[in-house]
Image (cartoon, rainbow, N blue to C red; front, side, top):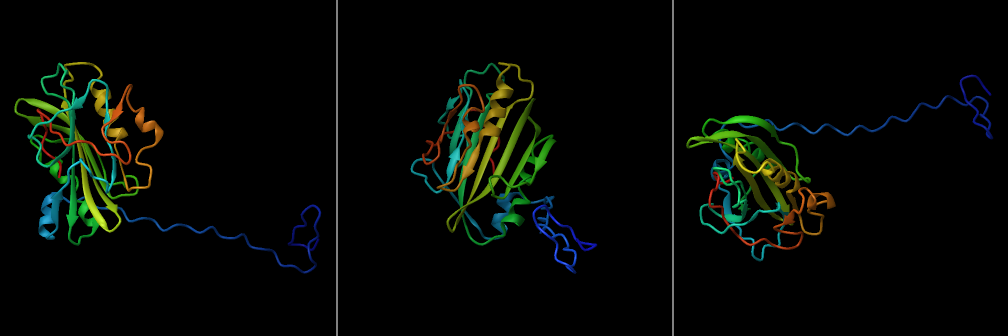
Length: 250
């Protein structure tokens, strides 16, 4: 073999052949991080952009597949306390002073806006709650959609509450929707020790997907023992509201 070349077993290096440089691997460009807005809630952002928010109801809603896991002992609770409620579930048998609950609201967004700019405002509404203490926050995508997730605690009257709120800007064809999940329970967990497990199961099992895609992996259905889904892929949950509702998302 000519110096500077390598003969593989069963082959021969051509005399005078030049060394072959290794092929450079293409590097995907880094996705610019979204800078969280310090003021202006999502609703205020959309108002400033003249974007109309049309409340959606679960009955007959097929634009998106939305999965809201329902832990054992929880149930849907019809009550008008949550404005524009799409679906609300709660543990009405809880011994806590505050009834653990989860709320979903869905709005169709009519008007032009930049989804990345919009979702940068997704943390502000929670940060404005009384005595807010942040535990976790993220603007990472959720199932390919722009999303904002924030978790923490705040004071409601004389009690501290733990809450997790996720906003998702989901697309269905040419239409865009704001899907918001808020899960809230008493910070003291004075009742059943499974309260925290139940709320965690809802947060981790929640899914939003466009029709024709999997709204939830198989593991999501088992996020909590004996968990059920309020809305399975391709079906719709009935609208409800919580008797002990936390501030509505969006």
